[in-house]
Length: 205
Length: 151
Image (tube, rainbow over the protein chains, first blue to last red):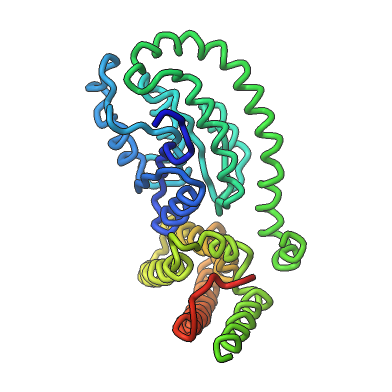
């Protein structure tokens, strides 16, 4: 327990599709993450300890036992969308430092930008692939860096983090722009598959 | 001996799925995720898909019978079906979902009806092919030590 390894990182995956939950669970487990899957934004918030906003008290960590290092969520879900969930996480003082990644089957630039602006780290085009899993670790590590001590020390650090975040925001925006640029490739791949059909398969494979 | 001929059969079957456009490269992704920890992953996901998609098609069939059509609802169901077909690499089914949604967007009832018939056909064919494929893999498994299907 002295060295933080990938096996200890815990990802919460949110998707209303049973098949996609099974897929993302396997993708994450293959990449050595601990995984919890839930079927809705509400269930996700429940898991994170945010059933009732009014009950959330800054002096008490909602879920002392369970630490979530990253949330990966589908965008299109009935009821609470991935975007709504993202907003709620970022508005919560106890959860806002958890990196959030959005997944969507649709490549809609305005949607992507809206999510990035709201604080999402990245946007994955579905179907999510093994190669996408590598992109998670930097975000988790960045989140970890905001908590140099263990969970128990979380409260002490919260005040420090509030100050650091305002400084980090500038570099974060630069990172987001960079990521948005590199994202073009995976997004293009999605287009190629859709538009050109089988012929492109030979080239990709 | 018998196992290698089964292996060849399975490989040829799989190749035909790709050549004829029933599956796309996402299916390879599923195979990549299968290992000792999850030795039946592909079959499990495919079984899930076939069950789930059959259910959805049933729901859509009922919805299609209602008049006037609730195109927004149909679009939602198709979005779900498209998503899960995309996740397992069911290319023809996925493409037909796209076409159906286009007809919905135009409130084109006839187009929707035709597209849906085609979708049901494609789905039935895919189901048949995939079931035959996994049946063959099972035979291979009992003919010798089970290994991950090669590309």
